Amino acid sequence: MTQAAQIQQAAPVLSINNIEVVYDDVIQVLRGVSIEVPKGKIVTLLGPNGAGKSTTLKAISGLLKTENGDVTRGDISFMGQQIDRKNADEIVRSGVFQVMEGRRIVEDMTVIENLKLGAYTRSDNQINQDIEMVFSYFPRLKERTGLAGYLSGGEQQMLAIGRALMARPKMICLDEPSMGLSPLLVKEVFGIIDKINKEQGITMLLVEQNANYALKAADYGYIMESGKIVLDGTSEQLLSNEDVKEFYLGGGNDKRKSFKNLKSYKRRKRWL
Amino acid sequence: MNFELLLQLIINGLIVGLLYGVVGMCFVLVYKSTQIVNFAQGEFLLVGAWVCWAFLIYMELPFVVGFLLTLCFMAVFGVLLQMIVLRPMIGEPIISVIMVTIGLSIFFQSLTKWIFGVSPQSYPKVFDTQSVSVFGLNIELAYLMSTIIALCIMVGFFFFFKYSKHGLAMRATAFDQQVAQSLGISVKQVFAMSWGIAATVSATAGVVIGMVNGVSDSLSSIGIKVFPAVILGGLDSIVGAIVGGVIIGVLENVAEFFDSQYLHIGNMYDIAPFYVLLVILWFKPYGLFGTRDIERI
Image (cartoon, rainbow over all chains, first blue to last red; front, side, top):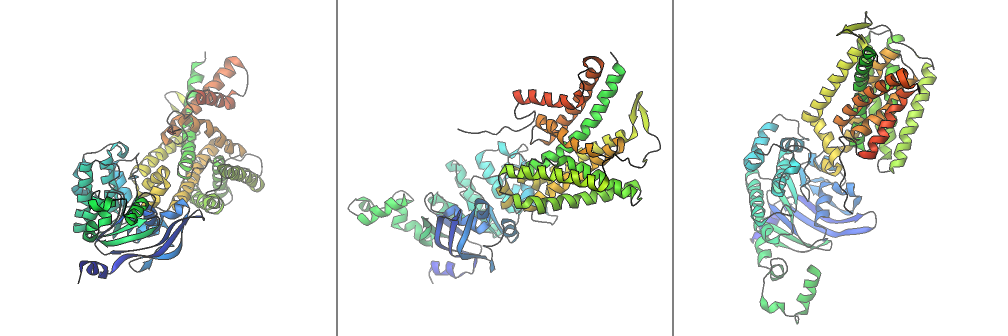
């Protein structure tokens, strides 16, 4: 059995089935997107600006409704439950937690307060233990006692991921965790994402522009373009795909860079 | 100059100012978490004071029982008001929401007049002695109690917002509603809770003031007095509301003192806070503690 078949065969925790999303009743952003995320894996969703990656994540987490968006067709189910009609807070309670683009930590609160907020939906008394657990992944957060707004970009990203862990989710949707971070920090953040996935068994759906790092961390990838999935495969398949190499990873075959190759040229225009 | 009177007035101002601070905190709480400028803030005091009066007079309950029942009633009242009247207004233009709160203010003023009449009523005696002497100054026992209650409420607010799960959730909602929702916080619940808390705490202030001055229509004017206080402190700052409240409380008493002793203009007690408000807005439009929005053009 090929690796692709193996990954596909594992029962998906999250399956998005042919959804369409419309903002303000008129602007259609997603035109039939289907994605499956297998349990315990990291799946990445790549694509250029405006392809609809963030919209897909917000459709999953229910935050679409706060932006006047609506899933008009198709359905999303998480662990067998249909979630596309639920409110954002109910979806968090059912185990899907979104780390929004641009970190979005509560700037006028301390690190600890932000972490406590992550545990809002929980009512057990192990919150302090989990704060220590988050600090074991992100030791540098422990030293920061001031307001979270004064943390560096990388630390804010770590706090945002830590806050997600506090909810003890079954799945985390990460929207561009590498945004605005230095290459060294990007490497560190992806390392931690991978570590959390392996150690905690939390399924991850990773939206990224940094295709290289994302595909290295992920098991499976989807590539999106103007509201549709145009390509999918295991990360090895995508990393060795000529189109992906040329358009996303910078490089590829010199022969293909000829303007005579009209098909590729057209494709390139669409992708960039 | 009559220093003894001045000192007495300043102390009165501090005591009343703390109560303004408490009511101001409620106003800021509602404004911060729901972005609604609540013009019916004063009516919370009015309704609370009348409800408590009804419990004590009609049902002849002991003060503590009646007072606690009033608090329960007001919590439910605030939550229902938010759910029934204000929840449908979410997403409507700000001016419509303001008109609704002004409407509520008029409605509850008329309703209390209709039910309880227009003449001021007083609570049955709670304390045996009317006033105590602190450092040679006469302070009414009810005022002393009000100060203690006000300080307790402030400390309570501090701990609630600093350590409790729901307090943190309210702060997160005030910071960014979308972020709050992404954390699993139900914004609707937070809205209802903020109105419930505002109604309950304001009613406490209403009862305390009612014990001293009697229950009457004038309680709702506290809601108007709170405006200079919160704008002075900064509309979105709880600490600002307290500081603003105390400043306004002292100021109106001092203004009254100079007016009655020297100027004889009349009515300075009510007007002075608004003069100061104008001057402050001129120099510090965001108030003393308000956050300044950074707008990029």
